[in-house]
Image (cartoon, rainbow, N blue to C red; front, top):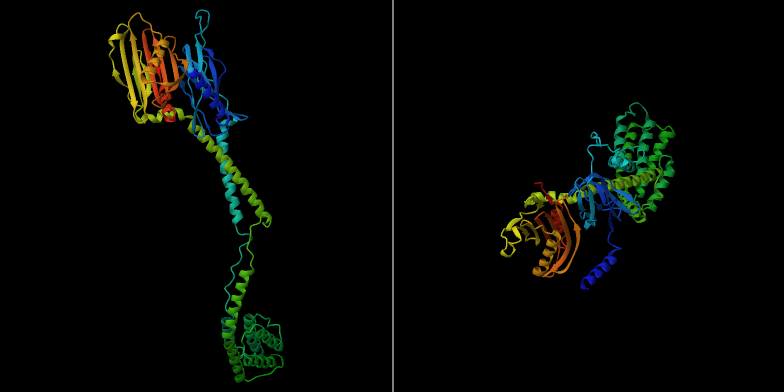
Length: 534
């Protein structure tokens, strides 16, 4: 009654978690085949990503013919294997390890019956061996190459689009020549005027035109007024207004001096006045003095104006906000191309990553044993014919004495054991030889072992499932897989028994039920069991 309640409780727990835990199904198209025939073994998972299926090579005396590609059906991933057997008997497909989002799950085991095929060598003609038919190529064979091609193409489109997006629009603007200060420009023009020798060539009018233009340009730049088009009176009026409005600080004497100079120059330019050489040189000196006297005042004024304008610009300049609507049509097209390229890169990059993860995980079960070979894994043999298995440590002989009370039944008894103190796991092998005339029942031997374990180890909550396990017609066996609790610790165990005539072999493994690595190691040991031919 207690055991039924335990099963009922476990069943209710499984129902409670059925909405969260992934569902794993295994199926075969037939459970009975003849030697050489094939059976399709299928594993289905109700997930569409992050699933790593096992890579099968050999399942005892069942061999893997082909490993088909993963199919996606609605909300399921389906992995198919084609198996065959060349020895008759009852063989089991053991539980397979599946990784889903870095968690380990196990499938149910299945039993396959392989029957012999009677052959009439007299009536049947012998036929030649047919070559292996090659499977035609399908699109999925080339899919990884297309994924890489699309990924590279997406990266190229992305890089080119980014280049055009950040490339300066239009032609490169010509570098503006560095502006010369107005005062320095006026001094240089005075020097250039002196070197033209206009006076020596009697070009008095031209001389005064350039001389007054130097002063007009200088004042226009510094005071920011149009001086070249204005008459002398208009110019003086503009300077007075600017001086008063903006508090430039030009003295009345300086303005009067400028007015007198420009009026005298107008007489030369327009009234055909012919001044003497000394008077011309004096006007040249007056022009220089006008600029020299105005320079400190105008320089101070210009600096103050720049400071005011910069402050005003900072206060009035609105914060620029990005707006897709304000972008140019060209920029919008480039941004759209960039988004599309990013989608291509991310999509096909993820596809390549998923493919790599599947390839990496497909060999997870096999690599568990392969990688462990560097840590002491070795093939070991027991009895005759030899039962061989691969173990992570040396399974040493612990006893080869037949107890006195069993000498009437047993002629030989060898007990081998390996204990890993680090993870508290154990592997033990027992090889028994009964006296002549006694052919033991392996079922009774295994049940006796279970009963002894319950009594001596004080096992609690013992639960297991039973499966047949055979190697050909001569070696028959049974496989128990389950769990128990001892001293408050739950352990998972495997117990396998095989018999041939008057010989019996037992393999027992146990370890922490909640330690996935330990259970994987124990399952690897069980899957490696074989019998060598005598």
